[in-house]
Amino acid sequence: DEVGDLCREHAPNHDLTMKDIPTMQKLAHAVHETKTCHYGVEATVFLLGPLQSTNYAAIPFIVSPTCKTEKWPQLASTLDLIMDLYPIYIQPYLGPLFMTSTDGNSVFHTAQHNRLTCYTPPVGSALYIELAGLLGFNMTCGKNEAVMGPDPKHVVKRE
Image (cartoon, rainbow, N blue to C red; front, side):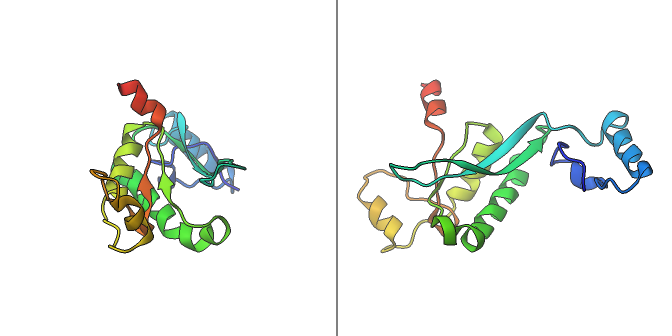
């Protein structure tokens, strides 16, 4: 058993187990007195959903509280972990990871851009064949040929 709802940025630096009263008091002191750990003020939610016209349902598989001090390199490490583990644990059930998307959060967008525009699909690969005919289209992608898809509502809001 562990305490939840503390920020992912600072919680790993503390003992979150509820093994005894002194441990809990030390954690309460960190949150309320020294402010070296915080309650999550928002959450980063990772969802999985099939790209198909029927039976589309995005399912949350990670909900992670944040105190909003995280910078893009730390979030990029989380994306790396997901991209590395997806083919092993999720792809056998849901198929390949084609795209990630963001709600417009600048930290997430920067992390996503950094990780999903670092490769060019090999000539002859399925993704290359699909994209090559789109003149002027950015051919870059991430690990396992996943592409970046920002939330369209935030693109429209900027226009």
